Image (cartoon, rainbow, N blue to C red; front, side, top):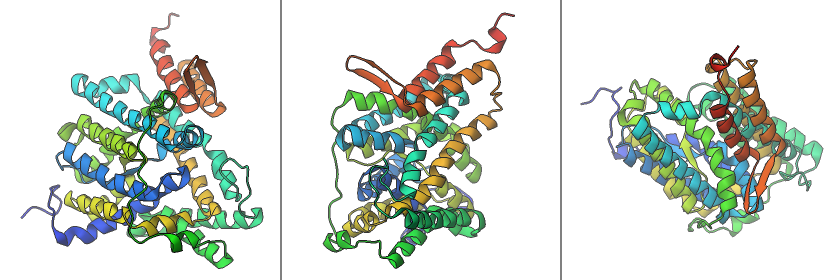
Length: 416
């Protein structure tokens, strides 16, 4: 019998309840991304389950982790869906997954150091900050009861502010004061509290739930070739690709295993990339390793990788329950807006945190120049076009950051 702290793969029916618990931990964040971006939450459930199994196959079932919807791509998905439609946006997201595959190949040939030299924290940190900052107006508009672009008032402003602040307050309170596994699901509790409040105010329309079938095929969407979407979205993948290193290190510290060496970060990044590309092939959001699940592994001592397989199976099965997606679609805008204020602010703080952890001197002229240009280009919506070729927003900011990092001399190389 293996030791209780040994990481291994056992697939046994008795572990199915633990798998359901893991899905519960991931559920709030998992469905939040499609709800914010206009994608189908049932498809997101399906691609999270399949993506987790793909990741397990690539990493030879060595890592107890669950993959699901990535927050880093919310801004480009919203823009892509509004500009080119879902099929074209999926093309860009599939290409982003292939960038992960390319990076994994580079790491296999040259080692992980080459990627960190090209994409250091002075580039990825500001890019992550831009992702959070560019979404701030969307969060505020929805918290005020408007559509994301602020063009239509869906809920009276005074009512909306009350609901959104309750959702925000509960989310913060759970993250600070809850104990045990409940501390890992603040988003879920924030959504539930706001939803209950909306029920009491008569703001929930159950027509979609009544009209939906119990069982139905998720609304899969095939990608449609679009160069503009590819050029816009692929650079965004730079930041989450580097953050992947941190995710792998986090689960390594929890389990006491060095996954950067075995199975290797090239394999974990390959699994992440293939899971993201698969999700995009059927209309789902990009996948990423979930820190909530890493917290659950640490808290519950779930070292059996087979538990993650059960979580993936439950996610796939739940994807075919059409009423789940219908219920999620009835969540009023202010509820999501309150959650988004914290979520998008947190993304920005993660970017700042990566700079702090790296000990970067932001007053050093080289670092100041790189960070300043990335942030202003990204938040300001700078664009560049040449015929059919165009870059803008986060994508342009990311590429400019990489180029500046490569061409600007380091202080020790500057002649006095």
